[in-house]
Length: 357
Image 1: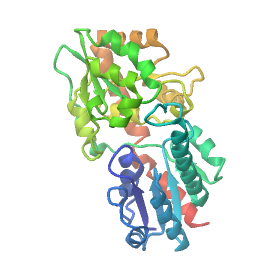
Image 2: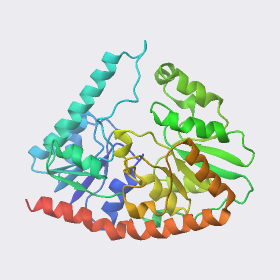
Image 3: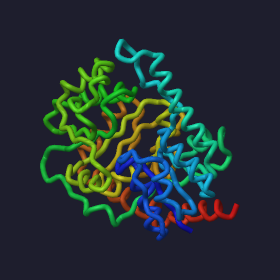
Image 4: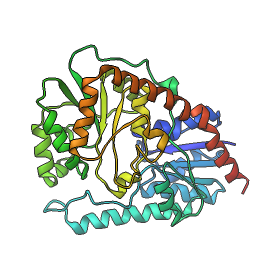
């Protein structure tokens, strides 16, 4: 069985959704990096002519859809893989730079492409139960393939050897309601001499100029906060990059939204492999990415509102032993439960079943 994984580049979830399962299963195929070069659908089709199965991870563009159609016509099995929903667009704003009509048109075209891709696919794979339910409305052949880790790619965890507690914050600085959850936490700690806030996101000056004009209030806030900025990097150097930050904890505040309910626990996995304890968002419904699995929840501190966020952060600030213990236990748990070695068969089983249909 020859499997090709296609992806938009080396960002985001490339490792866990493409590289790890391909290598662990020893498939003959290779990845095709799409989006980095806008070559024609015919040229891409030639690159995968020998494949039995072609996996499209996070396909959003019409040229990717065109390639999938040509491959299916040639008898290839098409797999649509994704780890986000496209149904929740509440974070988008309109003003004189981007009208509500233009936003709706753009999102409508994206939704149309995704829906067509889902209808075309012989198999749909995703990361969470919420996504599975969404995709099953269009295609009944949906399988959950969980995110995984490969210990080979993770360096020896580096520890902070200073007295300043380094608190990592992951996510976007831009356009979602998560900012409203983050604001009071950042305002509480940004001038606290005990800590240093470390933001893993694209700094305001690096953001799209149109977005800056649309999200005026958001960017005004980020431009004045006292944080240490670290931009996104490609996945081939991400783990070393994250490790070099020597974080004492990572906090993941999220708004209670459908989009965030569909998110996976990937940040928890990545931080745990570096023995960095995580404080994650809890939702009233108990289905955030950090509590949906009761076993995961044993290795994460959970917070619901500003008061509980500060209480959990203070708990870790005050107790170095607790930070190390929680980080180490989470590392051992994730290394076992989520290792690609122990989960690669899920990909193989799904694809073998597809080939037998």
